[in-house]
Amino acid sequence: MTPRWIATGLSQDLPKAVVMAGHWQGHDLAVWRSATGRLQAWNDRCPHRGMRLSHGFVRGETLACIYHGWVYGADGGCKHIPAHPALTPPATITVASFACVEQDGVIWVAPADMAGAPPVLSDLQPLRSISLTCDVAAVLAAEPALQGQDILRATVQIGEQGQQVCLVAQEGPAGLTLHALCGVGADKVAVSRWVEDLRRRAEMKVAA
Ligand code: FES
Image: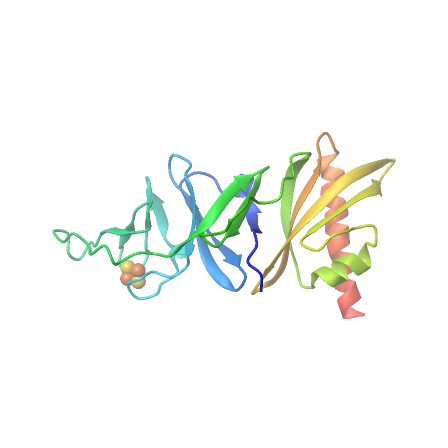
């Protein structure tokens, strides 16, 4: 599979000092924002005994594992082991990190050595993320006006007006997530309802 930037959430859903689970092409991630707003995406596995770091908690500029409390700094290195408070943890205890970029209200993840930048969606505003129990093909079948593969776009008739809609697709172990954006100035409530209706129509395509 060709490495590429994949959306793993919307900026508005990850406030400061919060960690959440994310995914990149089969890899589970801990995506977290420090107390000052620094964004990171790490392998979701504590180097100690493998607990998910997305179950941990942010303390200032560090992320602590919920199991035995090992603390990891911004560079991914272990900084503190509560059971051995006088010990300076070896530099080899490090969490693997991914490239993580926030752009146009979307959080994008790629391998650490990824070249290039994520897609630009500057003509849009973030709306919401929604989970589906179907794949992208079912979404396209439900709404033929949508064009694209990872980024589905269309101008659709919602009420009296044509509205710009953009759905950024993220495949994960639990199914498909669509990160929805709409045109600046669009009726966000109406577009949000349209996205929910699209989910129903797409999931019915699978059930049919
Ligand atoms: S598993 Fe994370 S500190 Fe032990």
